[in-house]
Image (tube, rainbow, N blue to C red):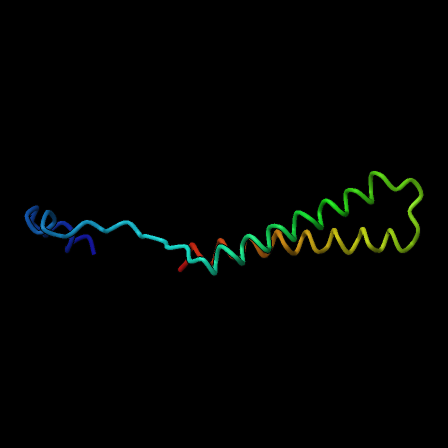
Length: 90
């Protein structure tokens, strides 16, 4: 491997085209999905925080709702990371 690099002429290296920067296009469909996931994530996070902060003596149903909203917020964050990661790999 080092022999081929060492034996290459400077002219051959200069003639190789430079790698073009990758261009990512964001489609309207991707924007819609990402915005919907973001909105749902923020709303469930706010609902969980509201129940946790402003409900003085939460019932079992309120605790369950808070746990569900917290889980949905975590899943939404994971979905956003997955969407962005999938777009970056593409």
